[in-house]
Image (tube, rainbow, N blue to C red):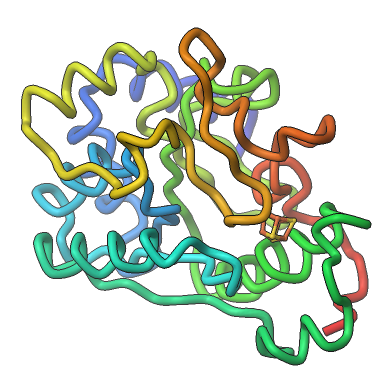
Length: 235
Ligand code: SF4
């Protein structure tokens, strides 16, 4: 696909609603499309629209073994509500063996911990598909602000970001209007929820993602920033 073709697709997608973007993606990649979800409050709007537009879409969840029990319960509640086709992904090593081998790797080397528990299992699964959908928004991080609605990764896989131009305000307006479910920790200040050791609640006025890896400069787990990293998985 040429740069010009990609540019034209992005212009087209820009004119579409999110549900139209989802329908377009399935039309382009029937049975070769998948999405990822972290099953937090901010994930629900896209899951809601996916359930309406492409209910058969597989939804990948990175089950790192470090999630809050509330996140797993929320995942199960959303699966039940929307009849989602969820696929849980784990490191081949298994969580207990990972902990026996690496201990608290999230403290000493969170990038490697994310690589083993998130990026590597995800990339292995994505190899079965031609395209994936993610719910990132441009206003979330600097890296996400440079993404496009449609792009081709170095490995040739298409990446589609149907919510890229939604702001935080857009998301919460939709969420409240549709009266969507909330993650059980949301009212305790968890505006963005990842693994328990790497997430804290945010205070009023703080950025929504400021509670993620709050003790270091890490802002991304790596699935959106280094999907082609050819690092040996020590698992
Ligand atoms: S978010 Fe934290 S616990 Fe989860 S995989 Fe990354 S470093 Fe490990």
